[in-house]
Structures are given as structure tokens and as C-alpha cells.
Length: 498
Figure 1 (cartoon, helix red, strand yellow):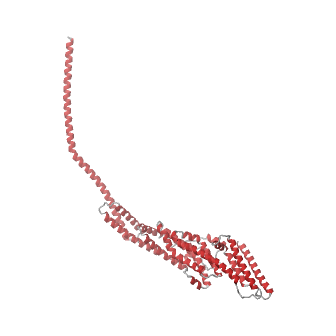
Figure 2 (figure 1 turned 135 degrees about the vertical axis):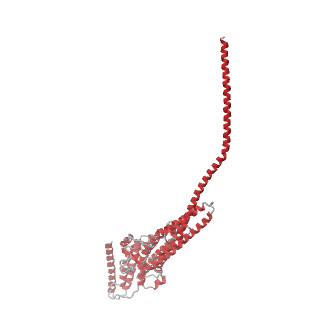
Figure 3 (figure 1 turned 45 degrees about the vertical axis):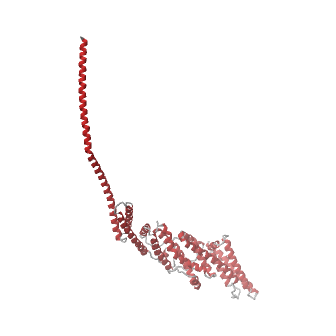
């Protein structure tokens, strides 16, 4: 009985499970149908939304493009605005506010660069043409402003102003004229005077007011940037060269030929040579040095023009100064010219290093070589004059007899001449080394010995003019005694001075 009941119970449970599974399958099928319906609806919804999504993306891209366009338009409009402001300043000209005018030119250049690199803009070509025309007009006004500023503030330097720039020891006398050659105050420096001149302080003259120089520099820079270097060169050269030449003329420098020199009386020529020595120092240490400084300041950054401008500005003035020295060196030699030749040689040696510095560029080679050539020519003429003097002493045929057998005028003349030579001994030593590298002290001694020997030979000849042997011996004794006494006194003087 138990087994059938158990089987019945199992059958009931199996039927129950089967029924439950059938219900579960129905529910599953229903859920699948519902989910399938949702998937279909979502697909339909996505299909319906796609045009909206496309429109939304297009709108977003349109907004982005509009923002970019607005920003680009803002940049372009700002460039137009800057161009308009720059144009207004340029049309007003540089006179009212030069600094703003220069800023406007810089701005205009920036605008030209902007539109040149953005030629995709519809009106960029027209804007570029207008801006370039405006820029050309601005540079033209700039040239005129540079010319006017440079001309208005470039004035010849008066001699009195130049004299004030000299060390006290080289300033003119109270009479207002330069100290003449041969005055104690301006006589060629001996060793102790030379050292004081080496340490002397020169104050460069103000050629253009300091406040104007930066403006001229900025104008020059703008002209160079615009490619107007040649216009800049011509304006600067013509203006400054003319003013420098006037300054040199006001000093009293004049161009003299060899014939002019030959026709002059010695006193007049000696005074002109003394002035020339003074003016050479002023020209090199003040005028040419001042021009060099000014040129470097105004044309700073325009290296391609600076050296050439300075060379062209100074070339005529240098030529006038050196031509006078050349005329003296080429003129007929005479013993009295020896000391002025030594003075001239001395000033050229003194100024040598400064000339090399001021005219050291390739553009100035002609002036540098001319100065060097004059120095050598003066040295050569002075050396030849030595030989002439020695020969003149030996061949002096003066018939003037000294009746009482006292000192002959030739003796005192030669002794004084030799004394003067020793005032120039440092200069003479330099001069000897121009042609001979041997010991200059020995060369000076040799020259002096030959002159004294020539004098001795001449005195021997003159002593034979006396018929009385006693007068002959007295004449020789007096002259030799005079020579020895003069030499001793001179040696003692040199010892005391040193």
C-alpha cells in the first residue's frame, strides 16, 4: 500500500513542476515579445531622432565657425583700426610729435606684414597697396625731417669754442689769436713739455645738441629699414661735410700751392706754419674726433654706411690741411726752414696714433696714407736740409772780415743753430729712424760732429784772410774758445733742466 501512495505523490509533484515550467515559458515568451517590441520602438525612435542629431551637429559646427569668423574679423578690424590711426598720425607729419610718427611707421610696417601673410582676405590687395603708398609717403616726409633737423642743428664751430676745448697750455693768448710759432708758449715741445701734452685733456666740442642726436638716430634707422640708405648717405654727407669745411675755414686754414709758399716772405710763412701746427692738433683731436663720435651715434646700427659717411664728410677738410704741409715740404729748402719742418714733423708724429684710430677703416685708407706720406716727406725734407746746412757752413764764402780777430758771425750762427737742434733731439731721433734703424743717438752725434767739422774747416779758411799771423791765431783762438764755452754752458743748462 505504501508504494502506490508514494508513486502517486511523485506523479502529482511532477505534474506541478511541469505546469510551473509551462507558465514560466509563457512568461518568458511574453517578456521576449515585450522586449522585442521595445527594441523595435527604440530603433524607430533612433531613426526618428537621426535628422535632429544631424541638425544639432551642423548647428554646433556653424556656431564654431561663426566664433572663428568673428575672432578673425575682430583681428582684421583691429588691423584696419590701427592702420587708420597710423594714417592719421602720418598725415599730420612728423613735426608735431616725431616719436608718435615713428611709432606709426612701425605700426604700418606691422600691418603690411599682416596683410601680406593673409592674402586670402578678399580686400587684402587693396589694403596692401594703400598701406604701401602711405608708407612711401611717410618715409619721404621722414627724409625731409632728417634733412631739416640735421641742417638746422649743424652749425660751424667758432674758433673761440674750439680753443675752450683745448688744455690750458695750448689755448690762445689773451689777444684772442693763436699763439704764433716761435713763442715760448707754443714752441715745439721738448722732452718735458712733450709728456705734459701726452697727458693733456681735450674736451670734444658739441657739434649737435645731445637731445637731438637720438631723434636723428631713430630717423636714420627708419630710412635704412625702408631701403633708403643712399638718400640717408647723401643727406648726411652733404650737410656735415659742408659744416666741417666751414669750421676749418673759420680757424684760418687755407689751401696753398707750392708757388704760393715760394712767393711769401719768410716771416709771414713762419707764422702760417705755426698756425697750421696749432690747427692740425685742433682739427684731429677736436673736429675730426667730434665728427667720428657724432657719426657713430647717429648711424649706430647702419654699419654699411657709417665708415663711408665719416670718410666722405672729412675727406676735403683733411685734404686742405695736408696740402699745406705738402706745399711746405716740396718748397725750396733753406736752413731757417729746418726747425719749422721739425715742428711739422713733430705734430704729425704726435697725431699719428689718433689719425690711425680715427681713419682706421677701409673707407678712410686714402686719408691715412696721405698723412703717413706727409710725415715721411717732412722727414725726408728735414734730412736733406741737414745736408744743405752742413754744406752751406763749409762753403760759406762771407767776405766780412773781423778786423780785430773776434768771434765771426758764422760761428755764433752755427752754435745757436746746433743749440736749437738739441731742443729737438727726441724729434730728430724719431726722424733718423724713418730711414735708418741704427742707434739714433749715434746718428745725432754724427750729424752734429759733421756740422762742427764743417765750421772748423770754414774758420780755418777765413783765418788765412789775415796778413798778420798773430791775428790769424787770435781769430782761431777766439772762435774755438767761443765754441767750447757755448757748448759747456749748453750742457750745464741741459743738466739743470733735466
